[in-house]
Structures are given as structure tokens and as C-alpha cells.
Length: 376
Image 1 (cartoon, rainbow, N blue to C red):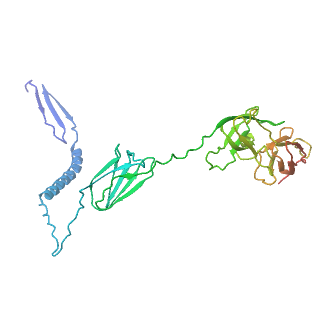
Image 2: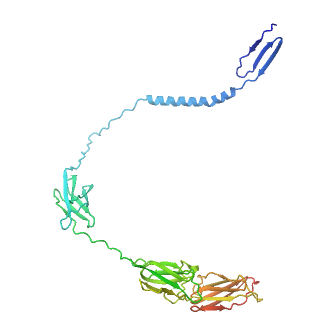
Image 3: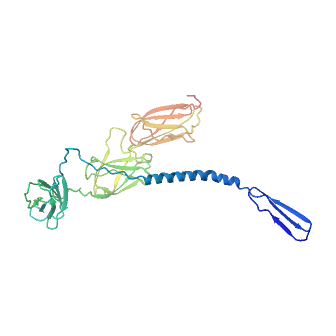
């Protein structure tokens, strides 16, 4: 065999391999390589391309068929035999209405709003600087005019047929509207002070004695006391008030009032005016306080026992509970004069006392020993 080089290549096609052959001298070499398989991918593409193509062709056919149909003929509307429609009569608007708006002295009133009701039609204009106004294209027949002007009572006029209206007189101007009386204001200073009473944080409440709907009457105000019991009402409306003092734990509340007993006493009053309290307003609480020492049946001090105080006539209004300390001692303050029920509870035992306190009284309570091991 000649020493020439010969190569033969087999053209690849889908699904077949490639065979290469060549001679170099007497030696032959064969190479076989796999070709990519694309048949399955093409089948998958055809699976959704064909339905879409069919759907598009169907839609195109429907559109062509619709556009090719002739348009339906419009049938003329014909009246029934013997039927007749009455003609539509539009009102004649050939009239012109012109007049003038004046006050009782004959002076023109500018910028008055004039309303014209003619038949079922409504129109409006404003009077000019000379008080004149004009309506064009007005219907025949009766007409009504309504005039509204600032500081004047509304006016009304009726025009019959072809009657002319020379002027519309609104009369004298209205008096100015009533105004509220200017409320005088001044500063009120004072102090809450009593022997053995800590006024720090207490609240002073001033409420008007006049009904709340009274025009020009004061309004309720509140202010808290400083460490020394001093308080200030800045720019307080002058007038008649009632005065109440509430403890720090009842701020913004309505009870207890530390200036009077629980029952049978009227609220303290105050007439505030400039210069009426040059030296300041002094408020003296009349509240009492109770204290005591709690012990168990063995004579030991009871720590952490609860002490509840409430008015005998209204047990639902309970003062903040007090607890006994390590020595068994407790104190309840801010008690206006009156009758109270004092309840003490420790463990499974409880005791109750009924007391009556006087103004600014300090009382030591004698509570029986409590059996904390007792079962309820």
C-alpha cells in the first residue's frame, strides 16, 4: 500500500456515532464518538407548539368570519298608525329684569346676593357697587326674588306679570351680634398647711359654683402642691368657686376631700378677684390618722399584715392598704373626720374595728393578737 495518507470521515447525523479512519503506512486507527441526542427535546417542543398554533389559527378564523359579516341594517323608527306626539314648548326667555338694592336711607348695598326663581329655574347674581343687578333671558310669568346681604335681614319680593321692580329696600342694618363678656383673670397663690400633715403632692381643685353651661362662668382647674405645700393658679378666671384638697394618691379624683368631714359639711367656697387674697389663700386640712402595732398570739411582731380602712357608710371606698413593718407597726393617713371600719388580716386570722375620728385626730388602735397559723 502506498505511503500516502488517506482519511475518510463519515458525516454525522442525529442518533449515529462518528467513525474516523485513516492510514499511516500499514497501520489503521478507528475512533468512535457518541453524538448528542436531540430527538426527545424536539418532540417535547412540538408537544406545546402544535396546540398553540392550532389555537391561534382558530382565533384568526373566527375574527375573519366576524369581520366579513355584513353590518345589520338600522331599522327606522316609525310612529304607530294614528299616533301623534305633542310639540315641546320651550318657555320664552325674552325678558330682562333690572333693579337696585338699597337700605332704609336709600344708600346702595353692594355685593348683595340676589336669587331669582322663575318657574322651575333658579339663578343668582351679586349687586354691583351702586347696588344694581340684572337678570337676562328671564321667563314670562310670576317671579320671586330673594336678597341676602351682610348685616341685613333677608328680604323677599314677588313680581307679577310684566310688573317692574324699581328697587328692593332691606331696611336698617342689624345690630352687632352679642359678644361674651371679657373674663378677668388674675393669679391666686396659697398654701396647704396643717400640723403633722405632709402636703407635698396634694392637689387643690377649684370648681365653679355656677352651672357648667353658664356663659362667662369659670372652668374647673387643678394644681399640685410643692414640697412646702405651696400652690399657684396662674391667670385664674375671676369668679365663684368651691375648693377641695385631695391627697397625693387621689390626684385627679373626686374623694376624699381633706378640708371637710365625710358627711354633713358643705364644700368650702372661694370668691376669687384681683387683690382679694393679697397674703395668699391658706387651706388647713382636718384629716386624722390612725396607727397601731400588730402582734401574734405568742407576742411576736407581725410583719406584712394588711390593714384596710373604709368609711362605715360606704365600704366600697377603700383607702390604699397599709402593711405592718418589721416591728408590726402601721399608719393610715388622710382620713377626714367620720366613722370608719378598720380591717386587719394576717395569715388565716382577721380582726375588724369600728371607729369614729374627729378633726385632725391621731389615734392609736388596740388590735387583738392574731393567730397566723389559724385556718380559714
